[in-house]
Length: 255
Figure 1 (cartoon, helix red, strand yellow):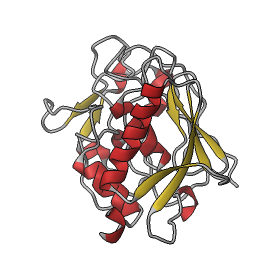
Figure 2: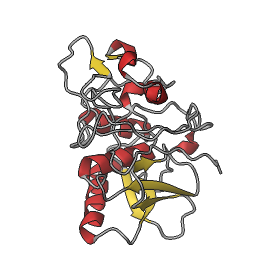
Figure 3: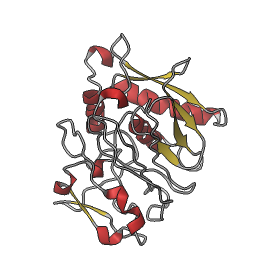
Figure 4: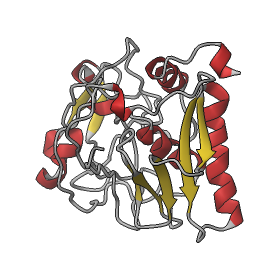
């Protein structure tokens, strides 16, 4: 089992935001704090220790069942209200409806996601082995788009703005980013699965995430700076395409 724990964490008043795809293997892990443009974007998240992370074998992917579908076992903590549990399950169903991913209640599986109401919005990236915490604080994290965002992290995807070719599509305004938060904007050695850069990805940071001053842009789309980024409504078509590519979902498994 891999004993790395990768958490995308935020303070209780901050929300997690955005990502790019994993490269093909999991050896090292990294922490990445996130801020949401839906609450207090621009405020500082708590600094985290981090390493570079790659996924260079299939261990970080969840395995396929004999049916060809990918089963991701999970538990949900009892301190969520019924309507909050329903919202979490609806986000899972939304992913399942468009991919071969099936979130299934844990029976006795060794590897599983433990969804808990603890500080911030956070998730391990990919399958790390054993129990892996996915944090959805009821103070700001239990909304459809944020739940989808964290679940997609758990499937093995990073933030869109960190993908290896991002400099062709966005400008990182380092002068507007506090030094302690700069690691959130470092490029990763990613496997982009032959898909285009996606400004509309649910895994993309908003334009003022981690700004040194409220309203300052940390990410500017290029060549068109008016392009919208950082949505937390629903997976984009390219988000869906990437999940299906990474997990080799065929037509039969999408039924």
